[in-house]
Length: 417
Image (cartoon, rainbow, N blue to C red; front, side, top):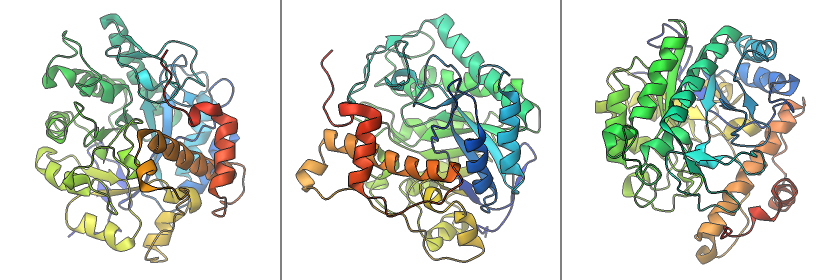
């Protein structure tokens, strides 16, 4: 039986030294010109020496006119090649492989960072405070965006990254094409499940064609959107089966969107197979195994104990365990599990106490999600500045920082306009 200490050989020929992955976290540490700077080098140096087999960056955008968060790094060309090379090298010097997560936000373009009108497969707006209604993409624009993913991957290859992970989860553009809720097109990019998956498949194919043979190409995919009328587990399994034929190196399983943040353990619609547990999406991964062929599966979301990580890999449910938020308070989380044999990774719960009736409202879920993102982002910024995490930062200080950074939109319902 495989063990979390065991290496894993990928289709590209790369070898993960163990089965623990630092999964993507949006850092928000790009320069004014959306390049990487010394803060990202320092942050990833810490993760690179943390014992992980693989480190995945946060959102790197393929178009500077459409950003997911303030401070996103953007790779449209090689203007930041030197900085990207330093970023990759700082991670790899610690012994970990490093992949760049590439992304386009689509309708989830952050209104605080994006001046252009958001774009999407169809003009379906977000039910999240302050988000602008998108316009539907033309077919020519769709082709251009697919080429952007491929070109960004080619630059990452030239900069010394070991691979890319295409972000196809959490309600971003690839996920928007997959979901019947957000893709209401009737052309070759939508209308039935086969056409809705065309965008994801084309992004993977053109990306693979643009990079060197030893460069890894992976994807992050939702198990489901957890929204009525959205992407379902059945559709997700069909997409995995199609992707398995595309020479991928890894498929990471997650779930949810900004409207229904299941990746944080709080899905608005909660199925029996994704109920709150230590590993939110592990049961789905077990069911998806028969569709993934020889492509390894990673599961991210909720892992906290060494026992659960070991069981997930040894049982064959997944090949790689992804750790996200635990790495903001312990950048050497992999060594804590694999070397120090710590039984549990401790992550503070900063959610303020509130009545269950209020906590289950869509408005409260949006606020709590933003609060957690702000808290963990604060820890990342401390690490990037050369400091140490501060787990004692409380919800009131975090809420004040959230209000300062996002204004009252963090607290109020969606505007009518």
